[in-house]
Image (cartoon, rainbow, N blue to C red):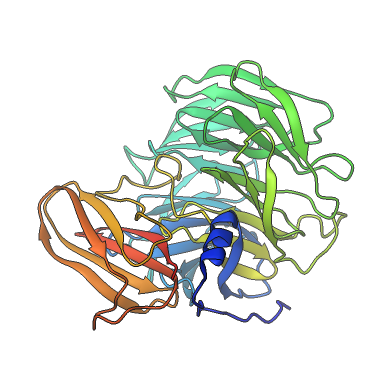
Length: 453
């Protein structure tokens, strides 16, 4: 059974020394919310989706036994299960627009399905299907890369309900990560790097097949694109779990280092800025500081798992994925059998533009406030693509509205406003974490800030 959780949302006033300490706590993990899911499920991947109609954030949580959960996490302290979609596979899933593409993890048949979630309370499973796959990745350009067998590339823009296949890479296939028209193809026995500027004609760039790597499972690149972090899901101590490559020349990746945890097998890594977020199965959720991307440093860990071994049959239970691409900066972690965890991470403020898969382009831009942390006031900049009714509001960590800063029709372009750290009645608010949310027409964006006194 999941252990009892205690939520602490009040933040005391901090001294100057504490301010320095808070700034040094880069990568520190704080539990914000938790939602247990039925024990008969086999929880797998979690991904994020933002409803363009109202800007609400949702976690999409897969079930290996079939289907996926839609969880409203717009108030991360109180996540709410909206519905479970049934009649579709739930091994892996990714959204694009208001569609969710889910696959069954197999390599034979035509069992991958598409669900319309434009109304999250009443999703519609569509009749169209595409070939079975083990995993899927969707680029911001609207190309889906379905792995195993090989890599099948689909266009999900022209007809999202019946995607057309553009190309098939013939190899084993397992998982992939798309970044800036480069596809990292984790192929079990090998790493392949492809240039997919033209997804109908991929160009092989380079790769590696180090025999000491048990299984090239998944991975992500550093923010400067010079390093690649690769998960070896078959690794058992003393074999390292994460292998680090220098890919400054992607045609010739050079192994330069590794990371090992003797208590767990690693599953998934994602990088945003100078932080790496890891689903580490029985070790739970880990964050690494990539200030020096060649030598990651463990910043913090939160053990979500009830299991404590890297040996079968529990090796592949625990924290399956850590999704760090939400606009609000909240990290979603799916754990079998414990449920869905929601975390904030010191220094992580939200989605990195051009990285988050499956997202339609936003009609607004919301910058990080400055200074941050701040006292007594901070500046917030934002921009809209067209004239719109704009609301900029401040919320507490419990979802309570603190202050409405902007509520008016504004022309297209950049705008700047100030928050003086007071509520609607002009009273100074306490030190702590706050969220500011911009709504402009159907578009929305949210970021996190810290008031320190």
